[in-house]
Image 1 (tube, helix red, strand yellow):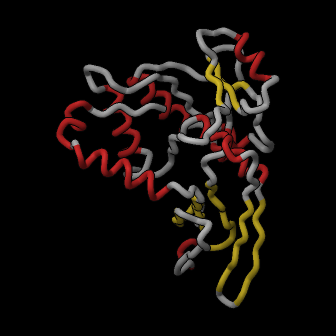
Image 2 (tube, rainbow, N blue to C red; image 1 turned 120 degrees about the vertical axis):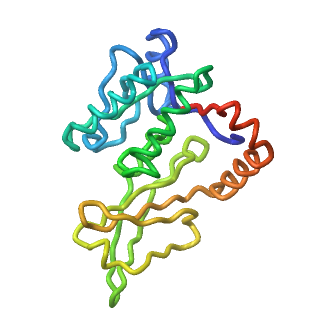
Length: 233
């Protein structure tokens, strides 16, 4: 966390004084509140969402399952984000840990890969890069070269330089491989509506973070499982 600035405000106890103050404080980029806020529809965001106040809620774990299913039933263009407010997932019954496992197994990495669960801070950066970034292309023989430019505002307020590029018209099954330069620390490809998608991550600390959390887990596997180690969203 060293060298990072705070750019996210979660309204405390419905007190709009904090929201009003943050609106005039440029380091705060994105805010969330339980009332008097906008519904976030990711595919409707076409400019920098800085300073906007987004709706959040504090549902119980069983409510989230219904919430997610109902949201996925909405057309993609109109689909709202599911914003779950919670302070930690540690509870005596393990309901939150079970919910996160269900999300992973059903809709995320080990499911149909239709749900992404970022923090609000990470979502803001992703939206910023999507609306402010640019992609250039060049074809050389059977090779397509994409030049992706992600704008880099004040360093300490931007920490998640990552984006997914949808290459419409290029069949994902026709691609034999993808490579990137040293600025990219995480690279993967997939298929969306039959076309190629390329996800890139440029966090310099990506590998170090992965090693750190693996080491923490391996050092205390038994008690970590027994405690149902909490996650904070």
